[in-house]
Image (cartoon, rainbow, N blue to C red; front, side, top):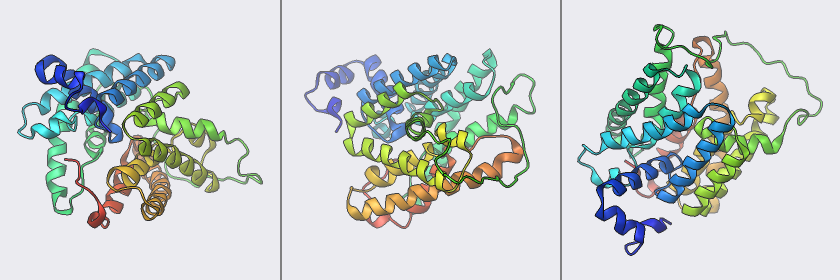
Length: 330
């Protein structure tokens, strides 16, 4: 429930009466919408988690990039006619992720900050484009604009000397992963994998940050928090049974897209029920397979999957489920 949106709340009165506070409110909601929540307190807790994680990992530019990307995308959306979507923060969340991703993989320079600004604006345009295309199936754009725009910038870094990659995967031809473990859980740190899977949605690995992310979800929707944890746990267990690379499992890299899939299918576009639970569990398991497939597909070009496994899996599960879904996001 969006407590801050209650008609009589002090925050709502402040936001409605002051343009500056309203912009802060919408920017906070934009951050919260990364995990489908329309609540400024959730956004505040998310930003706190991002700053904790980014500074702990020695990449503070990720935190400031999130703030910049969300604010710029929110400002770009202000010029559009759909005021309701803007006030819900729906134009800001892709910019938030753009701001997290680019400093993660590229050297922090003045050019990078300009790229974050450009990519955040373009993410709004791409969102409108994808939403229009998908309108026939009543399916949301999700984080596809973030993925597509970020992929373009990251790929361009190989061609431009002014963009230096610092953490992109080394291009590699696909090959079989040889794993012969008598005990599947040897080397698997289950709790690390589960909590990192939640924080890796924002490209950081942090226990404290994960707790703050879960608190932010619970403030808005207890079901969302439950599905986030369950989705991450199921993804880690699935990847373990499939004998994926241990480091990737422990770092949450097989779980973060599954977390978003779980929240989307389990509590955002469906009302929780036993039928929805089973449908969501199947979707989460499939997301892990999509993650592995896209890891293989993108290995030769040396770019990360980002949240595209979540996008593809959710699209495939939401289209046939449209008869039981509530109203979609823009």
